[in-house]
Length: 137
Image (cartoon, rainbow, N blue to C red):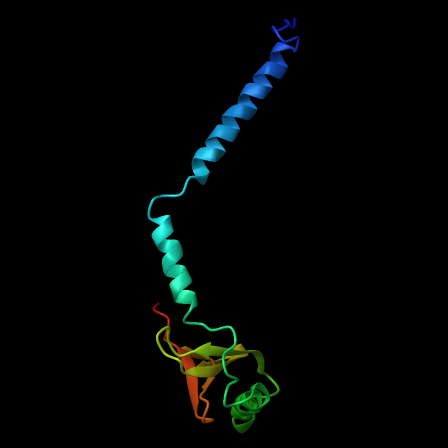
């Protein structure tokens, strides 16, 4: 049997409204940021200045980097079984302004317990093979 509340709604509707208010209050409490969030926000803003949007174009173009990475596969007769799945321009480190191309091979190339996952190509055309460390048994 349903009873009427003072405002004319049923008891179950009043309970639902109370639960909804309770959930809203809980979510509002969850959205409060800790005091250190402002410092973190400023840190991220300052860090983003290290990555200028209008950076100079790389000395080595993407098509030349892709050609060098493909030559790495071709020179070892791997071009039919492995391919370049990704070519990305990356900074050497956060503080450095040097950039390099990173080519990722798919599938990775087995090297006796280790795997070659790609190649790092410098702006001068130098190549460093990217190899994962051997997995521990």
